[in-house]
Amino acid sequence: MHGLAVLLFPAVLMLFALAMEKMEHQISDDSVTRDDVEEFLAGAAPEQVGTLAADGFPAALDEFRARRDDVEDEIPVAVVPTVRAS
Image (cartoon, rainbow, N blue to C red):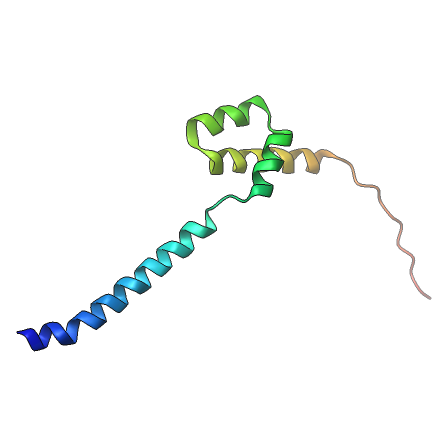
């Protein structure tokens, strides 16, 4: 019985370490950077601040970016004429 434990323990330990590494990678992808916080605080509307209080920073940042992208889509972009080579 001790021999089986000696053989299985390293494999179980390795699987546990791989699972923790995968979890750590997911957590680090969901983390918020300092630039994200500064950008949010510079331009957040009261609705986004309410979302921050209710749902946390990632949800508020997603809402802020969606609003910012909608505003950028509404801004007309100047059309530059293309020149064709003959």
